[in-house]
Length: 464
Image 1: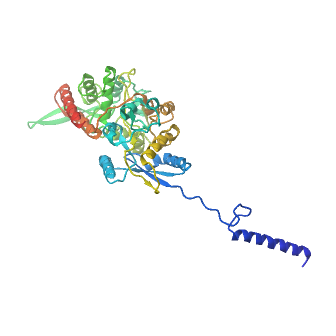
Image 2: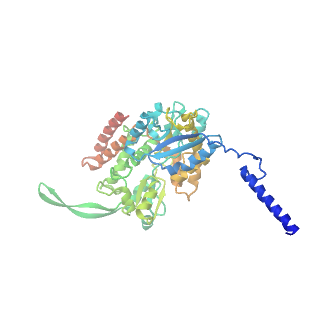
Image 3: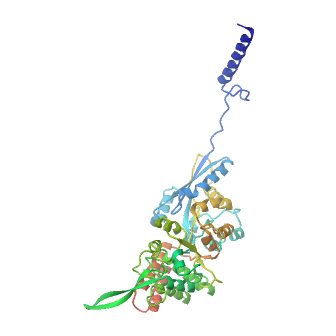
C-alpha cells in the first residue's frame, strides 16, 4: 500500500471515529453539551377558558383566541379560549343557567344588550385599570354607555353594533328612473307608490248567502316589504325605529314609550302601508315572507339587517342586482337608528380548567376580552363576522370605505339608540301581535292603534 493511501485511510478512520464518538454521547459536534443530552423545556402550564354564545361560530373567535394564546405564552402560561355555539336560541338562557348550576362555567357568555340590567348582579364588572369611564365613552358608540354601564361600572365591552339598513332592487329603481335611494320617509312613500304594482281582481263575497262581486286591489309587486307583522322579518325593529325617530325631537328620557303622540304617529305611519286607501299601499297579511319576497323580485325594497345580504345572495345564487343604503329618517337633522347587538360578559364565579396552578379565572377572562377589544385585535373578529364596529374609530374607517359591505351599517353606529326591556323575546312577540291585530281589524284604524298601545303598555310593564 502506498504511503498516500495509508494516510488517507487513517484520516477516514479518524473521521468515522469522531462521528461515532459524538453519536455515543448523543450531542452535536462542538456543542456545549459534551457528555449529556440537553433537557427540553417543560411544557407551559395550561388553562382553558370556556366561551359560549348563540350566534357566532368558533371560527369567528379563532383569530383573536390564537393571538391571545401567543401573547400569554410569552408570559409563561398557555391559555386556550374555547368558543362553542349554542344553537338552541329559544332555550339559550336556560342552558347557561344549567351550566352554571352544574359548575361547568362558562367563563364568558354572550348576552343581548338589553339584558345587562337584569344580569348585572351575576356579572363581574370590568376591572379597575382596564380603562376609565371617560375613555370608554370616547372609544365606543354612545348607545354602549347607555346599555352597558350601570352605577359607573362597565359590565361589557361592545365589539359591534347592528342596525337595520335599506335593501333595494337596483333594476327596479332604474326602471322607474330612480338613481339613488330615498333618504326620508316622505321620499320613501313616494318611491313605494311608484314601485308598487297593483292589479284589480274580482272577488265573490258570500254575505248571507248572496253572491256579491267586488273589485279588490291585489299586490303584484310590493314597493317595499313594510307594514306587516308576522310576515315581515324583524317588523318590531322597524316599528321601534319609527317610534324612536318620532320621539327624538321631544327629548324624552326614553325614546320608546307607548303613551305619547309620537308613538301613535309612528304606529299609524307603519301600518298605513297596509291600508288600501293610502296612495302608498304596498303590503298586507296575505303577502309572502318579506325576505322571500325581496329575493324573488316580488318587492323593490326591504328594511333588514346587514347579515341578510348573505341570505339574499344565497337565495338568489347571487343573481339579484341589489344594493344597500341607510334607512330613511324622519328628519335628517335628528337621526335615530335602532341598535341590536350581543356582548360577551364574565360571571362572578366560573371554574376554568387548569393544570393544577393557581389562576384567577375571572380576571383572566376579562383580560382576554380587553385584549380582544383592542383596535387591531377586534378587526379579526369583525372581518370574520362582517359586522360594523362599536369602536368609533373603526366604525369611521368602515363607513369611509365604500368598497366595504359594512360601510352603510357603520355609518349608522354613531346615531344608534336602544330600547331597554328585560325580556326582548317576549317584547318582540307582543309588538308583532300588536301589528297583526291592527292591520286585520276592520274598524277605525285610529281606535285600533289607541287600544293596541294600551294593551302593549300594560304587557311591557308586566314583563319588566
